[in-house]
Every structure is written in structure tokens, then in C-alpha cells.
Amino acid sequence: MPKPNLLEEVSARISEVMAASPARDLEKNLKASLAGLLSRLDLVSREEFDVQAQVLAQTREHLRAVEERLARLERGNDA
Image (tube, rainbow, N blue to C red; front, side, top):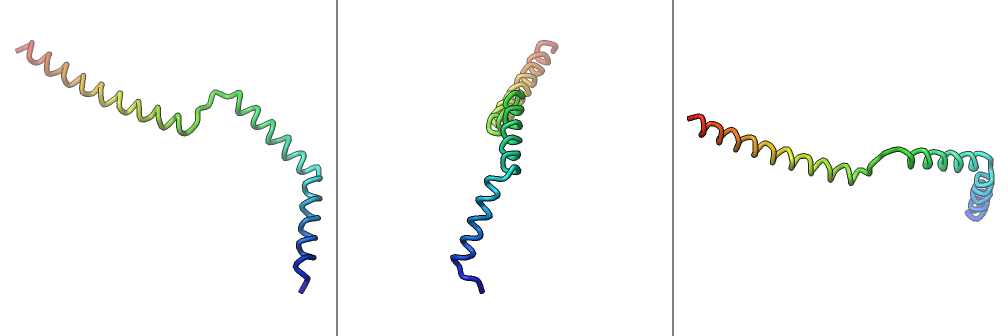
């Protein structure tokens, strides 16, 4: 069985080669390009979306209550 420090050395060298490879540069460039593209889009975070969904649900509930009250008032005036 190979010595542990030999495996660590081989692993470290493989990591060095991968870090210096063109594939690593390509990955960095692709990530930067994608981040730039996404930053120009009109997107919201999940947290902001969830907050707005909650506000919308509350607004709908309030609207429903106002509509019911209006219907009761209209019925009272028609009688």
C-alpha cells in the first residue's frame, strides 16, 4: 500500500495541475460571464419574492373583506 504522504503529494500535484490548466481558466471566465449576464437581468432574490408573495396574499385577503363589506352595505341600501 502506498505511503500516506505519497498519496497526499500526488493529490497536491494533481490539484496544482488542475488549478493551472486551461480548463480552470475557462471555468473562471464562464462563471464571470454568467454572473455578469445575470446581474443585468431584472431578477429578485428568493427572500424578496417570498416577502412580496406574503404581501400579495395579505392584500388579497383585505380586498376580499372589503368586497364582502361593500356587498353587505349595498344589500342594506337596496332593502
